[in-house]
Length: 68
Image (cartoon, rainbow, N blue to C red):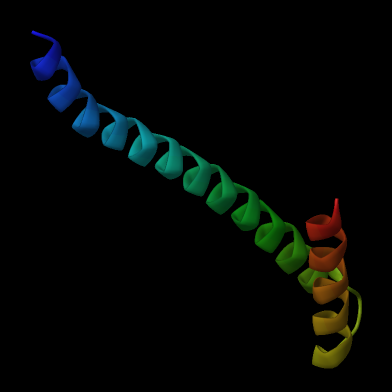
């Protein structure tokens, strides 16, 4: 009985670790997508015709969001 439990514990632990990793990766992806969306909106709504200025604004917003 104890041997069966010990052998079954290995894949169970592996599956638990994989689920935890997936959960953290999914949360990180969601956070990064929100940052990208916010930066894109900030760049597009900047009132200028200069692509360089819009890019600078978007990059600045993304940098600020990442540092929070």
